[in-house]
Length: 269
Image (cartoon, rainbow, N blue to C red):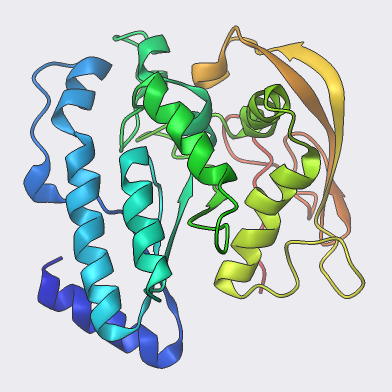
């Protein structure tokens, strides 16, 4: 999308106070990987691609007053740009994903496609900086506002079953609590997109609930994507969608889930 088209889209969305969710890797800064491995992918998609794309989004949002949300946000060096833009009233925010918070590039076997995603996993130093951006409570405290699953079977990390235990394992090491996870994964995303019935346990809200044992430990079996073989804290015991309990491999309406056994959530009419 060119700059003119980006401004036009954001201008139209601003008139509706609607949100543009944007992947900010600039295609002009990307290259074809020089090999099939994860290292080649990382070299072909450098942080400057995210930085250049974010510069364009911030400029368009500043001119139009539109709301833009970066998803996914992986290059931690761009957090300062987000914070600076927000400090002068630009309506831009971002979300990261559990694999960027939990899995550094140094731990990714070069030939394992389970670790392959776009943007790619970055360094352990970048991972630590992402945590700092997520935990930064200066100002409005939501420059990197939320954590989305980043679940993309076929073209990215596919491990939705293990995302909550993985995120909880990393959060608990930092003396954080379940309230923090709830804020990042439910409260803030719901508020961002205007889903007033979601994001909290309260009278009048949808009864979308999860029973979670934070003290249980489990080793991820084969088929767990990049978390295979890792020992994680926390176990999901049950889930409810709009008050209806789901079962493993079943949807909330009782029908069978798709291939792979994941209990996908049904659409709402």
